[in-house]
Image 1 (cartoon, one colour):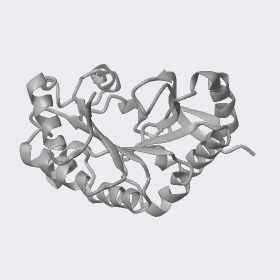
Image 2 (cartoon, one colour; image 1 turned 120 degrees about the horizontal axis):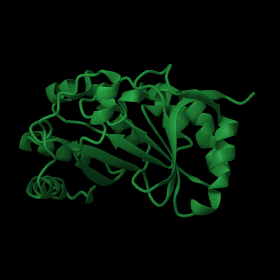
Image 3 (cartoon, one colour; image 1 turned 90 degrees about the vertical axis):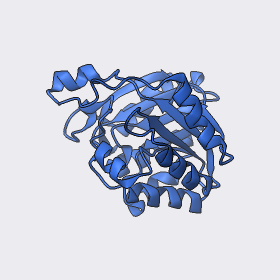
Length: 243
């Protein structure tokens, strides 16, 4: 019997979640409560809709010819909250010759993530902050599991892109950026860092769900702030892309 999972939505021609053109599966459920989340409707594992791995593979195969040079990305939510479902989906995608990626917060015990990582070609690891207090303020959870996850990816030499959302007045403190840059520079599996400017595209979802949106007055980072942040990572010898 095909494994059943819960998903939020699908994106058939994604261009920002890994190399090339991507088929993106947004899974349901997330243990974080990020202040700037643009998919707050992914929070609850009981939400979304049920789908089997076989049904998803059939849908992916419809777009297979467009995915050469690209592949399939499992995002969320937090994909690794549904490890058996995600592992089987990644395994079948690799069997089709498709490049696979997971977009994750890393807030998952490594032992639970290991089976899925065996069938993952690339990890997109979101590190919201390097300062533990700021991280907890943003996410309502602890930073340490994510750092442990990052260290494990380094240990197994898993290709990784680090994603850092630049939020003025929240994550942009020079010491915070410098600390993250220094930590990432110790990981020789990291292929690049993506500095992602804060936006409020998901604010309307918060309002529709009745959630208080605390960043109403926060503006996107200026070009100067983005450039300064990129430079801090580059100074540690890292390849950086500003999204």
